[in-house]
Length: 303
Ligand SMILES: Cc1cc2nc3c(=O)[nH]c(=O)nc-3n(C[C@H](O)[C@H](O)[C@H](O)COP(=O)(O)O)c2cc1C
Image (cartoon, rainbow, N blue to C red):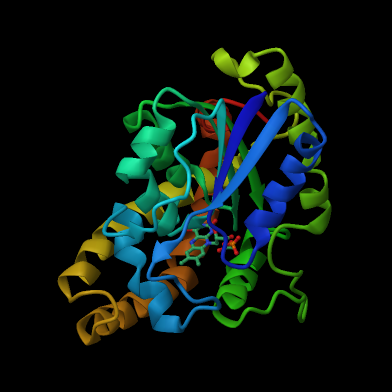
C-alpha cells in the first residue's frame, strides 16, 4: 500500500477542485491511500478580500515571513507528497510558505518526493523558484510540477482575477471571460492521477525522473518572463517600504499602500505599454535566451 499526503490551501475552493480531479483516479486504486490535509493559517484570511487587507499582506508574502499555521493532525510516513498551492504576489501563498517553514513540515517532508500543483492567475515562475528552495531546505525532492492558469488573455485576467478576489464574483462581464481556471482544464486534470497511479505501481516515485512528462503539466508563456522578473524586483523594493510604514493593517501601511497603488496604476498606463512595445522589438533577438528560460521553468515535468 502506497500512502500519498495531499496538502493544500485554497480560499475559494478552486485549487481544492483541481486536486480532487487529479486524485479521483487514485481513489479507485486499491493499492493507494490518499490523506487530504488542509493547511490552516492563524488567523484565517477572509474571502473575498477587503481592499486594504489584500495589499496589507503583500510584504510578508514576498519575503515569506511571519505566518503561523495550525498543526496538522498527522505524523504518518508518506511515500509521496502532493502540495497544492496558489500564488500570492509572485510567491507561494502565505499559509503554504508558513507551513513549509514549520517544524512539522521538516518531519513530514524529509527525504520525500514532492509533486507541486499550482492554480493561479498566470504568474507563478518566481513563486516556484521560492518553493524549490523551501522544498530543498526540508531535505525533500521536487519530482513534478503541474500548473493551471486562469482562462483568457493575461490582460483580461489582470482585471477578472482581482475582481474575483475583491468581490467573490467569477461571472463573465462586458467583453471579459469568467475569472479563474477554465472548467474544461480542471476536468482534464485526472490524466495526472492516472499517470501517478501507474508510476506508483512501478515504484517510480523512488527515482529522480519526473512522473508526469508529456502530459502538458507546465506550459510557460515566454512573453511573461521579463515582466515577472521586473515586477518581482519592484515588489521587493515596495515590500520593504510598506513594511517600514507599520505593521499589517496599520494606518501607516494603508498610506504607503495607497501611494504604491497610484504608482502601480501609473506604471500600468505608461511603462507597461512601453515595455510591451520594447519586448516586441527585442523578441526576435532574444529567441534563444527565451527558449532556454522557457525550458528551464517548465522542468521537471515539461509541457
Ligand atoms: C493576495 C493575493 C495575491 C495574488 N497574487 C497572484 C500573483 O502574484 N500571481 C498569480 O498568478 N495569481 C495571484 N493571485 C491569484 C491566486 O494565485 C489564485 O488564483 C486565487 O487566489 C484563487 O485561489 P484559491 O484556490 O485559493 O481560491 C493572488 C491572489 C491573492 C488572494
